Length: 454
Image (cartoon, rainbow, N blue to C red):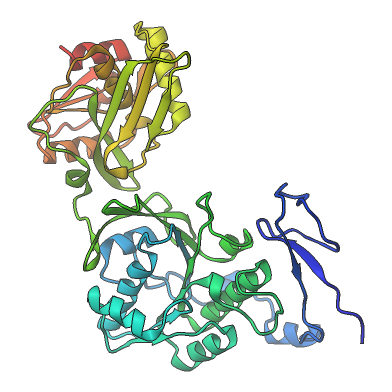
């Protein structure tokens, strides 16, 4: 019998080597090397048997087409998935500790159970009694929702084979271990082996697999990068831990768009859907404030009105501060330079703080004009009218460019009672303007300031 070869693997990127290393040559990370010992007698299937069991066939003869999606009755969750759960899909859900990952998936599994489908919740971190206490609090007690507290991969797979549930939630994948490997749970080898085996089982049985993953301090899912490659969907639950609102984003989705988001509010009874996010992210509009602007961003097919807040004050130090929350800091620096060069605002010696209210992150160019107007409002100590929404992309020459889905944005603004919309002049041609809303076209940031501060 040959000697078992020990491999050394990087915990961050999964690169392996035949000897120990202090710094990974692939990703440059220090002290990420772990020892990985494979099986002494691995079970291998002969090539002839594998070919006979799964022969190639023309793609036109493959049965199937569009899969019927399974709705969980949680609209925001289904929206992020692309319309519902696809049988046999594998999804990875990541997020900060305490953000609500387990609660959201427990509620989703219970909704399937309430609909008469079997759902299995595998908890390797809690006992069944602890999980039941949480399920009782969020109203997730269903007869067809099954719980198991197990971390052995072989036993978990055996239960899935025997039950044939519609969906399985594994909480979490970093705590599952395979007895065939000698490394500890959470290591690169264990995470890779466990996830690959669960995904393969879900594809074979048609069971949807949801893997809850821990995240690193950088905000990425802990473990090898291959974990995100082998699953069909990667979801991230975001939000301020001490705040009430949570945003579910899709970083990868083989069965739908990655532009859709789901918005929830964390309450005592669990994660509650936010039906109208624009009303949530807009403040009390009875009072006008300096340094604020209402912008309209589109997430997938959903327009959302949010408030951008800016504070411009004289710097007491030699190097002024530039702080941005919810908006790209580099894009903010570009808009500051445009206001200085094209509008003559002396912002070089000013501390500038920018914030998107409600903890939302906006990154599309359509909010550029609103960010610029908020900074100009704070610097000039002039208020913007509370019935005005600002939409437009700002170029380096100070020009205001047209954006997509302008009619959808205007309809959302009118629905919430706004009377004026300041946008690019190019948006005036061919756009259907809702009744009660006036669309004012501007060519550059100077013209926009004349309109909103007049």
